[in-house]
Length: 440
Image (cartoon, rainbow, N blue to C red; front, top):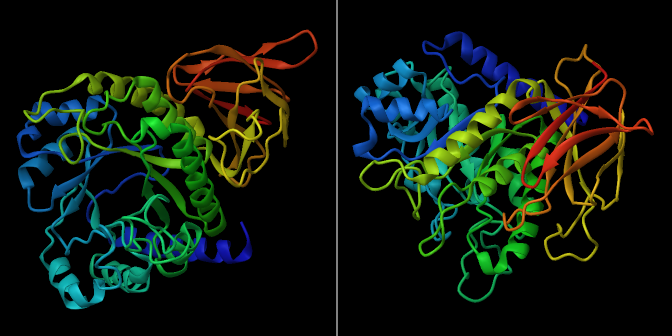
């Protein structure tokens, strides 16, 4: 992190530490890997439904009304947090027609009135202040955040950004409105970091929405990861990612391995919160609950994947992302990022040497350093990227050299085998991730 990033990080930490002193309600524990989900329909708010949320290892739900006290009471009872709406005016960028109009439509006094009416509750983890705004509204959003930090001390604020497939100035055809408010996505993210004093960056990207163009969309997905992860590292922000558990009309349900790949890929870029879309009806179909509030086949899939993420979380969150490497990716493949970090066949990174897949499979290798400045350990979070479409699964060995290595997977600690040449080996499967730690 450069000096500017350290300064911003220290300033943000001071703001949130000061706010925490004033907080009357417990908030989200950002030291843990957090798992959330979008949308909770009205017929899915019984105690049994809330218990099912907790049993699926979901920590919080986005989209519960701040005035829905019975639901919040159940959330508090079962340890589920809520990112609530209805406190301040909502805002959605949509197709970009309203870009730059946030101040006009929601002047400062309406935020003050909303803040004054908020009745605090221990289940309220954050207040939703908008979704997918244009960069033209980022300067005013910065003012809104500072104002609400004063008027709602200790209550975090939630704002989500567009993915990189939102329209920009050079889009043609039907995408004639500039959603991003900039000429490139990188500029959009830079403007957010410049103007909005929130200590995380959240965005959604759904890689399986266009099956016929999956390779092209994976390339865009990787590009999006690169831009956001680098911005978070540069400015000291946390990285929050929203993948899909649902699917578009006419498409099959998202498979368990596709769920796993989305989450693990994001963790190779340092994601600290995974927020699934959608728990119940919000958009599209094949959500975790159907229209009647009954669990679909997605519930069991998500429960298994979330449990794996939670088992990885304690060791994973001891480290923070420093860079991400593309290892074993074929030159010229249509699913490669347009601006790759590198395409080595094997990687040397810190304590780790010769990191590769035994069968040459492509790997997303997230390099990490310890959050504790007194700790000299380093880590890699490695995701098998050979089969994100979940069509033909492979099992292979992850080969590397490192002093005193430990490994952790979705089922817990993974035995490290020492090969005759002194290399280390751990098993890995398509779409799965593994955390390697060395130097403890």
